[in-house]
Image (tube, rainbow, N blue to C red):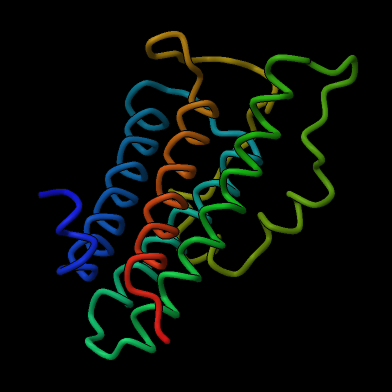
Length: 167
C-alpha cells in the first residue's frame, strides 16, 4: 500500500509531507510556548526550512501537471537536505560543545532578520544556545529528531522522483 502511494498518488505523499511539516512546527511552538524551551538560531533556520518544505510540498500537491509536480518534488528534496545539514551541524555542536558559545551567529543573524520574521514573530523568535540539549525523547535531542525528519522527507522526495521522474 505504501509503495502504491508513490506510484499512483504522489500528490498525496506531497500533501502528507506538508501536513507533517506543519505538525512539526506546531510541536516546536508547543515546546517553546508551553514547555518553555527557547529556540536557538539554528532551530529558527530549521523552522524556516520546515515552512519552505511545507509550502513547496503543499503547492506541488495542488498541481496535476507533471512538470510542476516533480519540479516541486526536486525543490522539496533540496530544501530537506539543507534542513538536514543545519540539524546535523547542530547535533554535532551538541555532541562536541565549543569552548566559546557560538552558533555561527553572523550567518544565522542574517537569516533571523529575513522579512518573514517580522510577519510571524511568534514562530521565528529565539535566543537559546545551539549546543545545549534541553529536551530529549528516546535519547535523541530535538536537533537529532529534526535531522531524522528532514532526512526522511529527502528520502521520500527521492523515491517520488525515482518512481515517476519525467522523461
